[in-house]
Length: 373
Image (tube, rainbow, N blue to C red; front, top):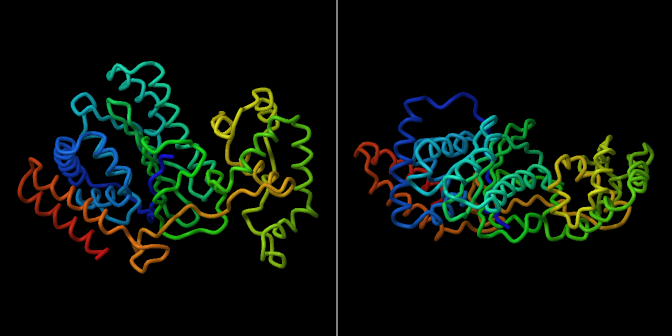
């Protein structure tokens, strides 16, 4: 599975000044030139999929290290700087409305690279599924508003996307890399980073959720009236107030949000799914119209009625802001960080930019790295 990491970042309002963005584009082009020349396109893609490396790059370009805007602005600067025909490396999508152009841009650039129809369809599917997983299969309260899909002329791809929690005003960033793809619905969380671990996050991509996945597929492939009966049983008022009893240690506490059953389900859509008969959970998740409510309702029914529990553990691994320097949950990989910093430093030093730009970029990179010393 390709997801490489997650980073939580505070939401900052406003727009990047034009003078700063212009310089970010110039510097990002210089760094990209060197890294692709020295290491190749696939290695550059791998670097972008590393949250620490991407964060260091953002700082070197001149953006706040902990701002949610570092994701959108850095991706925007890279997209402006990189010509797909020149580099054999394409960046599609973006923030808000730009994210909805991803599929069209994949088609256009895929044609430029002389990709087969099957290859273009695979890339489009990968773009859609990465968003579907992070917005629907993993329910952590962050709604996606930024989606950038990278791919090379050799067909390797990666994703950087970001979601916003409107209650906390924090954004969470998700990184993907194609070479790690085994399944879109099994263990996507390899090196996940975030501001803090949340309680009761529905994670249907966890390996622990596999029994629940199978039950969910069985549920939708059975006659919808049986599913409707199960749903009605769990949404009765007398039952709803005691759903927290199903979580160990919560028997005497008030109902918790993670067990709130959706109050409405699109039964016309459930009938369409039944007629389609999905073969597995990935196929179920990929269907249009299967959103967070449907996935949540099926997961709760599989748990509370049939005993197949999904994972409610936040897939976050360690906090970005503190870098895990206290060793909780585990130490930062200092060797990897040193290597990432060295690569960016080399890119800056060799880039065809002015000495002042080089000096300022190196200072920003040093300030970022010193946080983790």
